[in-house]
Image (cartoon, rainbow, N blue to C red; front, side, top):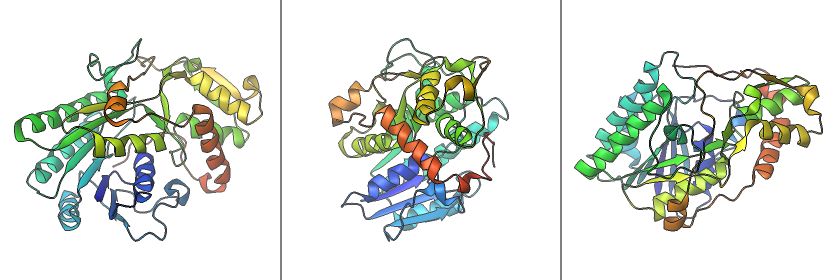
Length: 328
């Protein structure tokens, strides 16, 4: 089996690529991403001494000619699209989210629709499409996007669903809950909090951490993706999440406890963002029934795993940005 991972330098893709390389039937894992040079702490030694792993630097918006050449040369059975501008507060230059998350995806799929080598195109969606929920959202839950990011992801999903219905384009969509784990960029709450506390800094917790999210380790996301590719039904959308959401405050409390610190000494609670969703929570029953997948890594074990990764790479992180930056 040959796999191509678009957005192949991101943390979800890196964990998925590592999982795919563990499978005996894997012939090739081709990762295509815009970051050819990246802090080695974030790559997790992906593909080291494994000839089945190939990385090609390419921007899916501005370098599509190269992208299509790579696809047609390697002829992957499966194309997994992790590539996206992804940030909840996406109102600044919101048009950029549509360039990457909608227009680029539609062009790539149009190219692939005439290629016989493709067995499946898997779109990595988002749980943010459902907005705030008061119960686990299944795949038929009313859609309620609340940001340009989530609207752009919805548009991509709808485009793919229509391509399947009208053109029989082989596709699936996975909507995972909030991923985390080693290799995640430092502006995300778990690695950022751990990094700041380990460096003797106080961490500011927006809104007092009242927002609840369903945090899931990236390796569990990788397993869900593999299950869909090999056991799922073409044309279907699958939610993938953990059983219960957890508040951001509880996440931070676990980090503080693991580092043997006192909450009030190291955490500053600040005001929340305007219009912020209050709870993400997914129902993964469909995925479990069809593939047998279920999240395996507990939040406690996952947080410890991530903190240990941060601690082991503190020196490598000295010049890393702790805030989100919208890049080209």
